[in-house]
Length: 133
Image (cartoon, rainbow, N blue to C red; front, side, top):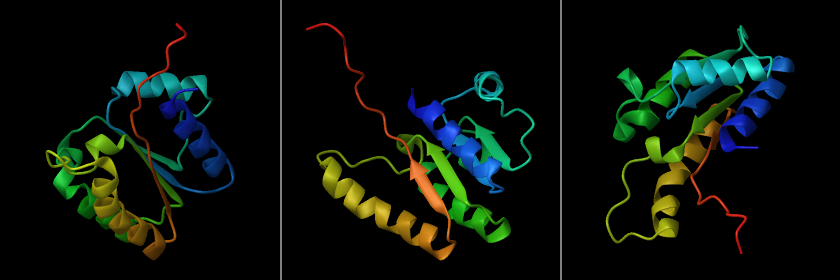
């Protein structure tokens, strides 16, 4: 199962239990996301707020945290799924190792989640395994 399907399955479980979820599909077109929702039996779910692509308010990684905080101040959400973190976090400085970068960036997201009693889950690209040996 891919990362997007995993997040959508988690969103389905949360909304099925009466929760509300925001799902940011930063790399998906509206058509692709609607196809996935249909495959999972999630089309028309009122408790699933969606945004596809990097447009409008969600176009600038340096402002993403502030925008999500504004959303949380306006709407009670049980979970936020951000697919994927490379589109959400500011660009990593040249020469900065991953650990140091994430150690600097992620605590403010954890504090935001704690403040609003909302899970914030981000995915990350990894190299896909090959079957060749």
